[in-house]
Length: 120
Length: 146
Figure (cartoon, rainbow over the protein chains, first blue to last red):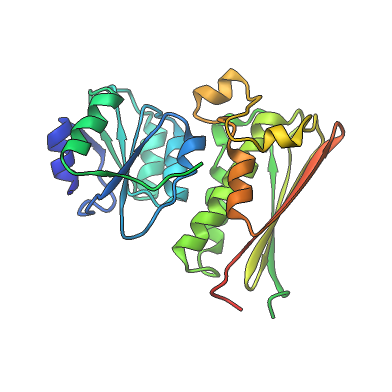
């Protein structure tokens, strides 16, 4: 699913658009704990959307380490300018929706986005 | 050939340096990109360094030192701190068990999976801890390079 289609489904805005804007998102993971996010088993052929309410630098660093191309900030939370700048440097797209995590996940799942491989 | 050290990187991690957690892992990833082009390998290594860095920032009283030794076919990471030590290593390796302060949790860290995650992704894992400090050594091998 293209970023513009994700934005349309979640009525989201693109806060940082430098990056893989034409990426075809296949899977997603949702968490407010970056520790749990680091458990993702990421595959290059399944580009991932990270859905989170965390808006500080750590979410960008986590995305960078895992090669996550796009992050969806939920609950309409403010994102610090330095986090957006770090995302720009690392070409990670930052999107924002006013939906809560439950609704955001439900809408994207219904539209065909699958859960990423994850095991404790 | 595999035992040839190409480079060693050293980083100091401050105690309670929550706002910089992950920054050293990003530096390592950038510094090693030319040596290890495999994205899968760099993700495994990056996650392990990230977790080691987070552990030092969250759990130590005086911070610690992170050494990254780059060989032709693998990377060895040595993380040393001066306390307060891990009281029960078996518990610390149990997913979900955490002693992280509220501040770390608010920033998205301290979920109790860090050491377990390193153990999962590393090819060698060695951990010793007393009240005088903790030493964690692990290696991540790149099997594509012999």
